[in-house]
Length: 448
Image 1 (cartoon, rainbow, N blue to C red):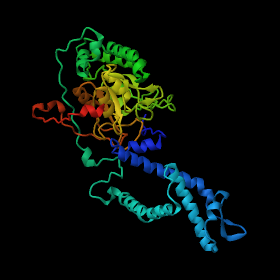
Image 2: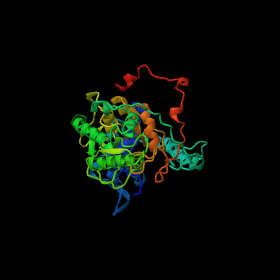
Image 3: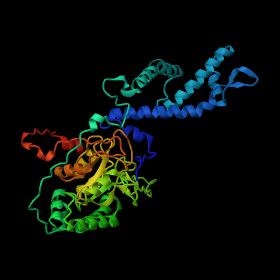
Image 4: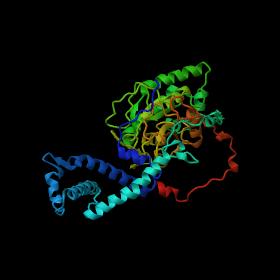
């Protein structure tokens, strides 16, 4: 089933703030919140006080009539002719409207004269500048040399999308042997598990059973799973084993279990968006990233926690915890993918990021994750939080695994115009002895 990305009627303030590029800095975030609140307050006050606008008395065409609550203010105006009296009444109403908005911001401490000065300065200085800027960026590229970030066009230029991206040459893990206990199996890398499958040391069905068992064992503590896709998982595992018995091997993800953040739709299963309102929602469409993983032979075992409407780690069933320290929470809306990967409940998972929802929980839960360049992974069938910022990426326990997963899910999504075939150099062909690696000595303090 084809269709656009579903969009929730989410919290306006949360969506506005999540789109701010400077989210990691508290001051710009606060200013954005203040501006949004002020604008919202003015809108509410204008609607509320619209009934208080001066009305013409049927018996006197020149005298405005004010409600009882404003007549006291009007009486402060000096006795004057009809024209001046009307102007005075308009100022009274204007002050009341502005003061209403200021009161909601706990800033109702200016006198009437200062309130009118603020309004006058805004009309004469601020508003003309805002309108001029809006006019500048409202055209294609805003007349600027470089495309304006304030004009979002999901279409990439044809020149940028002509080059087809080649696939990576995955490293071989020859000689990998199956551990004796399931705990060690659970923490093997994706490439190692793939080798066990390929050499028939373990079946996909058995691997699926191991990870479903771990999901159900640890989820009561971590609160990281929303829906188990057990029936689908065993069906897909059986198909993977059947293909392998016929000599068909789909690649390193053949028969490997994984989880999806629950903003990614899968037919016949709830896609809750982590929200109480949508906890029974079923979107019978296959998300593009799910299609890609299914074609690679991967096995979906669970829909994992997303914070409510893809915001933070709190969802309708609780709050997801950090497996390394259950006194802490995982942070970020990709809470489930991070926690489940960290605890060895899945070999890998797919999460999303608008502004920090991959990087923050990965750092907190001690896993390796990759937030790809915008447009690398198609987003059809994924809840939209910010069309120009949303990105999908893998959570793994090893960097090489992240490259393997990215290789499987990247590419042009025909129903997502913001996606494209982005040519990447093969990371497995890089000579690491020629790389210079930078790091921050106090990086761990920033995470904690």
